[in-house]
Amino acid sequence: RQRAPRAQRARATQGGRGRGEEAHWRRGGSGAGNASGGVTLAARGGAAFASSPLQMASSFIPVPAGSDFPLGNLPLGAVVRGAGGRPSLAVALGDSVVDLKALHVAGLLSLGGPVGDGACFTHPTANAFLDLGPDAWALTRAALTRLLTASEGVLRDKGGVRDAAILGASTVSNVLPMAVGDYTDFYCSRVHAQTCGELFRDPEAALNPNWSRLPVGYGGRASSVAVSGTPIARPHGQMAPAEPGGTPRFGPTAKLDFELEFAAVVGGPPNARGAPVPVDAAAARVYGYVLMNDWSARDVQAWESVPLGPFVGKSFATTVSPWIVAAAALAPHAAPAPPQDPAPLAYLDERARTLPDVALTAEVVPAGRGARAATTVTLSNVRHLYWTFPQMLAHHTVGGCVLRAGDLVGSGTVSAPGARGAGCLLEATADGARPLALRGGGSRTWLLDGDEVVLRGRCAAREGVEGLGFGCARGVVVARASARERALQ
Ligand code: MN
Image 1 (cartoon, protein in one colour):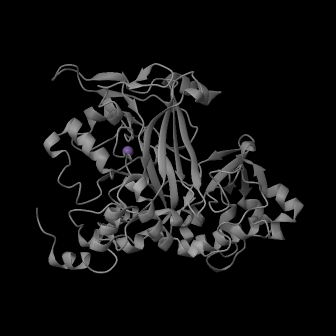
Image 2: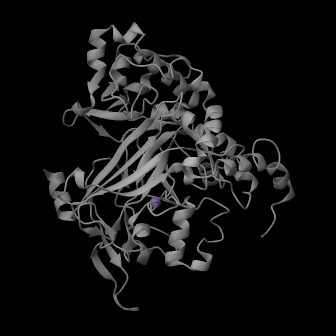
Image 3: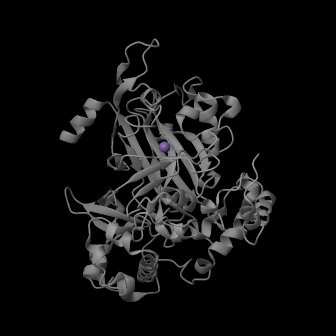
């Protein structure tokens, strides 16, 4: 293979990146055996958090053991009380939500500095807050942690404010926390790209030559992004003719699939047009992450995608989990990213490559069978991605593209090595050739009307670091007519 230019080779052997870290990764190995390697790096990355006395503190709001939303998480969302109300920004804590607008009205979020008077907390979307950047996010996070800590009386002892601001999660509904201006989807899992390449390209050359040189991506459709729980109407579209040269088929997709993905929510002031975000500055442009299901109509996608990529087969729906887990909350859960060969070009050469160690699952709940019949299709982890999020953002902007607060950047299907690592049905069933057995009987090649797909993500607890999670991203497939009827009800 081609050798990297001399400058890159030199850089790869210096200091933090390169041989030392690769060796560190190899020593750790993969899977469960990697725990020690992961802890070492995570402890370094999360030192600021581990040393904070508030990190493992408890709240005066009860948090059930094993909750996805302990005090160390405080994910950002937007909630509505009652029908048709105006959304309020909120953070989740245990089985409660804390309304940031109510805290602002009580004078508790006028934090000064980069947050100013805190007017952004009265907005129905998080975009203005996301726009402020990392200093404002850290200030807000520290203030909320302090307000909600058991030993702090400022909020705890103010009954009126508590009643106005702290609500049972079951008494509100979540809406999208940000207005998504642009949505991009990458293709960063080597296992996924390899398997798809073996199915549809030459098995001997499954990966396109560009794949290991740049994070491959495409511009998605921002209007497709929907909050967890939104019913997914089965899309209609054109599919390949039954005979070559014949008339294309048209109708509801027969190959509806899910894609288990992890997505960054962009923040910070927009870069100037024509001014790329350097790879080592790109982490500052990520506020946090959500789970994402990039629903796909494989038969529509197969017919339309050459030569310009996915279009109608993916633009109908993209489900995201309702709570944005801050990158700051994930810092203690950083794991080394897999080593890269060939060495990336200079603009993608990140000093310390990490990925959050988030265990991901995808379940299919068959139509009419209830949650107990859920079949876990996928067991994966974000740390299997080949390209990191800073690398995705650096590549995204290298031509001069502007990233704005609220942009959504998906990883692509996150598949893992092993029998249960397939992050979509396309992989799990080898494009429909190998039906997947369902728990309690029956099977699926593709999703049927009434099937529900539930994605979950969780960072495990370790000594000195509490576990946390993402809640879930769920959606039920419905026939198009019934989706319209539901909307009219
Ligand atoms: Mn995708």
